[in-house]
Length: 270
Image 1 (cartoon, helix red, strand yellow):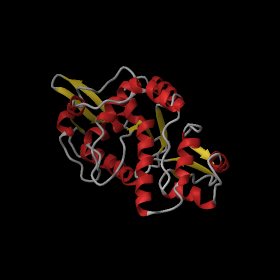
Image 2 (cartoon, helix red, strand yellow):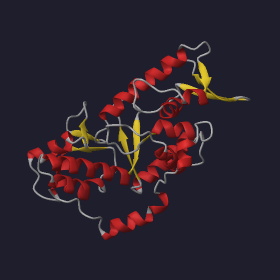
Image 3 (cartoon, helix red, strand yellow):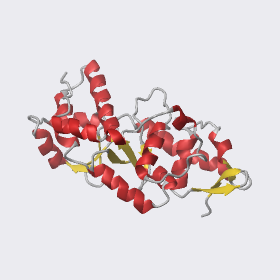
Image 4 (cartoon, rainbow, N blue to C red):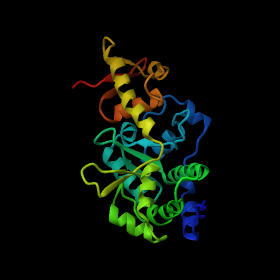
């Protein structure tokens, strides 16, 4: 099995430069309620906090990710979110992934978490002795840093991988089967970059959205205190209630109302 190479001197410098932006996890981050940290001053602060609060999911090896809609729920100016995300993407602090759960669904993952996710895939395939794993080294060395967009055309992917060695027909198929790419339905020559092992989580995301909305719609005023909602466990999603509330608030399906007794979550009127 080929080892994933150590970062180059340029890469190590970039990692050092990014240390200030590296998300830090603390017990305080985990315990703060939605009401206590609903809004943030900038996108990177929101990303750090939400990364720290990402729920532990049993039996799924997935690095933390944040939905763009969740950022919209916490940073009031959506234009600011989009602008700051674009800067973070260009600076290779984060990667942005198009999801198949909705037309406007995007996941944001810190670049280092994404690289760790790739390493886990390579390790698992190596243990099973599946495929020619050198293509993963080419992918990390020549594709990840060169192509920062959320999609890539087949020929461009082939060209970039060729910088590492002779690309065979099975190499790109191995990357797809490992979950690093999904094919675009409209154009089979285009691929979306993807997060490996995310499939079952995305299924839970879709089901959890419906479960939360169904729960609130059955209540008399279609509303509930956020502190009470956060204590409820979802049956159909491995993600926690706080994750779903941020998503649904940011996408406009839910809204929040500050009352004298606390924060109320309410279904938005059509």
